[in-house]
Image (spheres, protein in one colour):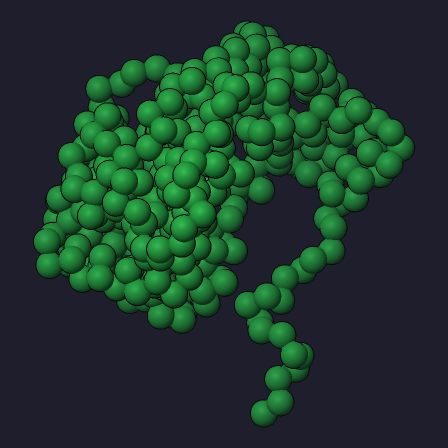
Length: 393
Ligand SMILES: Cc1ncc(COP(=O)(O)O)c(C=O)c1O
């Protein structure tokens, strides 16, 4: 039968601008200075990159191309050393380099799933999963995260979400947008569930270095040779605030035979693309060694904005802050007297402040707002002041 169009159904997205995007466009066209609390690009929020930090990208050696599908040994060793800093001992040959965490997800979906299979993803959670999976002809099913003062993995609900087509469970620690870290008991339950149903665990730890407090119950990483095959993802885009340099990784842990087979297969996937540039691989050891120079100012920014937000929605405010344990965003619960979309639209229309509605992250109920903690204080502080004033109307 002739296909209805020339293009794949995978790319049949509704590409029309939604109401909020149209409103934003109108605002900007009219010359408004929009205070954008959805900004999550660390290169656009006046964070200073130390002088010369990116010089290693021009290091000698970068002119030579010697394809190494899973990455140069020196770069893989630097990633393994970064895991060691977090208390995880890994041989460098467990590490596969990719251009981004998104690409690491794409590799894993190719490794683990056939078309029509499913992965389980946290709800609320990162909206890109839907796209990453559907581009591989894979479905996503949400499993709920429950909030009762802090966020918890609902293991019973997760178990219920497993179907015969499920191939992997994705966890994000700390979560986006929840900011919650995975706890030791949750990790154990996840490993058992994954081993029992022959599922892989995929742990996205891109925000792991951005904690607001310490908690002994948290796991620093899912990476360990437990009963389940596990893939732990990280990258410079978040850990160093350098999305433009395009370097990420995944580390493979779990039972030895499974691990070996996964690495062999991943090597062929990576060899098919060879997407990580030589200059960034050569620069990786230096950038990872100097990560604190980048993480320090980022952490200060996140903390300062979180403090401002706490003060703005303190006692007497109709909004409550769902205290994040870490990460780059904050969630506010707000009165459901307006739909999230109407509230966000009104806020933008009347006050020139832009925030994300909770539904963007697939919160199971209304009404939540999600704010990036990255913007400059000169944007963030007046924006939350206007937001707090609007909430009492
Ligand atoms: C949870 C999570 N994982 C991965 C990414 C993407 O990272 P990368 O730039 O390495 O693809 C993001 C970006 O916002 C994210 O929030």
